[in-house]
Image 1 (cartoon, rainbow, N blue to C red):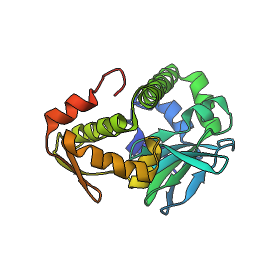
Image 2 (cartoon, helix red, strand yellow):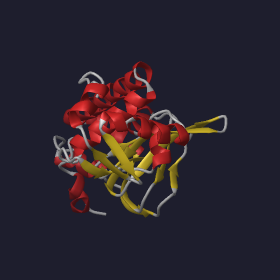
Image 3 (cartoon, rainbow, N blue to C red):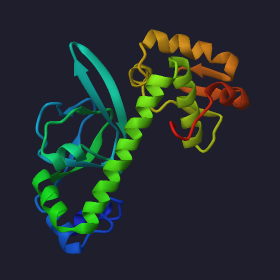
Image 4 (tube, one colour):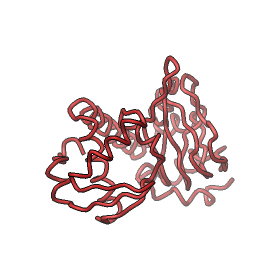
Amino acid sequence: MTTAKFESIRDLPLFAGMAEESFGELVRGAFVQTFPPNMVMISEGDTPDFLHIMQDGCVELFSTWNKHETSVATLYANSTFILAATIKDRPNLMSARTLEKSRIIMVPSENVRSVFMKDTAFAFAIVDELARCYRATIKNMKNLKLRSSLERLANYVLKHHHRNGDALEFRLPIEKRRLASYLGMTPENLSRAFNSLKPHGVTVNGQMIAITDLDALKAFAKPDLLID
């Protein structure tokens, strides 16, 4: 594929500042692949051959241990994943599977490492992206360790209230069982937690969330910029 066929990602923060020659070297040997829903693309423990860049679709990052599984993150269009493993040439710490049909650009990992060593703007962009991911990880750890499961759910609702343009009604972006895993809960506890949020201004009907008292929800959730 020619460089022109990857122009859809050229303006992403990770690639916007790099030289055109460097971008050409980066995408040499890259290709676009469409994955069906519910397909595991990456397995934890494997060494990454490609940096993945989502054009469209939805991908879940998850991990397993001793017959237990947990959801780590849900990614959408214009997200990159396994960047740290690519740069370090170390095994993946998470697996990835599609939640819906997804179109993904596969960039050879050796290209990423090679251009990283030569293009200063690209190197700075990678450091910035990894720093952003590190801060997000710390916030998530604080959320899990400092809040109860009900408080985590309340703040999740508030976050998606803002992401949906401050809408008082919106659809959950992921299935409830995956939401429970992401919040460190069982599906049964999630169901009970939603019921417990009713006095704090939240009702649920299937995948639909309705905020009936925003002030009450904020008073209970106590959102914090250093966590949320």
